Image (cartoon, rainbow, N blue to C red; front, side, top):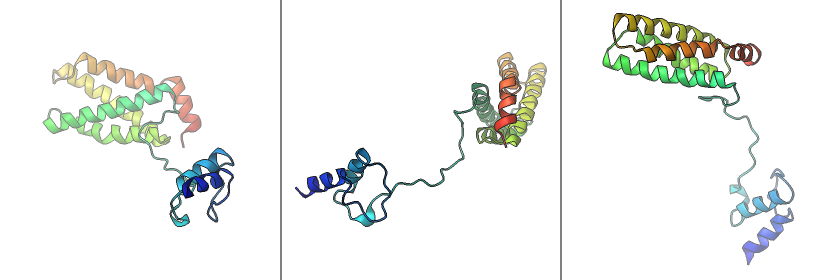
Length: 167
């Protein structure tokens, strides 16, 4: 059939559209020919080696301390949003404004994100401590998580990673 003839020609690297970048000789040519079978050359998909989108919500190449700190900051921002919506404690609004962008900045290797995260986590620790001592809803578990967040951010591995890789 015509399709199998195109597949065989594509496996040999023949019949590729003009200007089509070579993505490999044997397997790549077979896959390209299979994807091109039945389509005109103008609709053929081409290899895209352009710049990738660099913004991300969580960077898995960072140390575990920074990954977990980013996740905790997103979680804290979500809890702060909940507290703002129910009107429980007005200082939580500052955390909502600070912790979400701080975690996003850390995930994208920004030094300002790390410094904002440290400042926001210390503020979160202080607000949690005041809320717990005044009996306004914060529990010992909230205090434990806020101490853990500060410890994760100030861990020597986190500090050395941000010093070397953040810009």
